[in-house]
Image 1: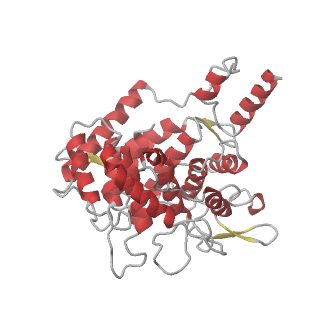
Image 2: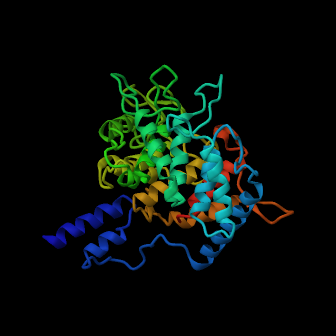
Image 3: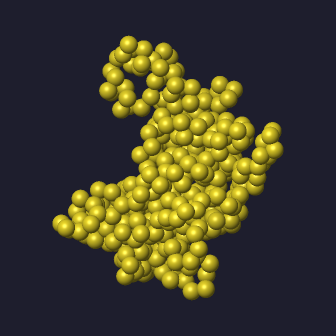
Length: 392
């Protein structure tokens, strides 16, 4: 019976384009693969060397463009500094410590009395994007490993927890850009960042002063909100299993099924964000919602565009795809025609081909010619790419 159950697990994993994880094979040492040709998902030494060089060139580029006050890009939005900080925190760059100290100092200057990490931007729709900025900043600060930042992260956790929307409406359980907008509005992007932040910083709660209430979100209601944004089987092959942005805004348009029902189109970046948000919310990797998202990826595999959005949000797509497939322990994508894709190799080659080289310095960066979602900002896009390459 034991061998039969192991065979079932292996068969299901391969059918979804997944490989059995190292953790699974260690706990079941008698698992034997039928073929030695199953790709491991790893990079060749030569390709690994190219990726390492590309990372170094781009970290050099970011280090040379950091302002004296520690910021990068638009100073109204500290998340644009936090993302490069996170990339340096994961690196072995020779200027790592100096760069991080300056970036941390700037981010701390954006901490608000309510625990949020953002700047007030008067007259702007969504204001200072308080949830988005706080979630990314607290995640990056945590990644530095500096225990002196614990009080800031603990207060930021309280802020994020208090920004979760609760109400008898379609937005219940989610997160939006700014809790003070005066209207219920949540979306999958903000919810993804909030869930990621609360998951990755959860260990600091053990350091909270004795007697102080621990901060957390309502995970069950969060999962319920995320699930509402995933297309059901009746939405058709193009959409089933994929995710969309929010309950009222079809960023990728709409589609009508054979019965005349209208659905919001699934698209790439939101599908991977939804999958990763579910995993961060402790939904198991063999849950039908995660598996159906992986199946959507299998049916629509491409690195040439953000599926459903073209070149819009392309580099966020690369970033969240990498993190989602890694978290899902998915090493191989099996396409509908049976082609097996070592996605790490394909992604590495794609990003290497897109890196721009500064002729004067030899440094590298990435930039999207399509400016939607701020991706004409090379700091933002370079940080997205570094955070993807650093975990391949």
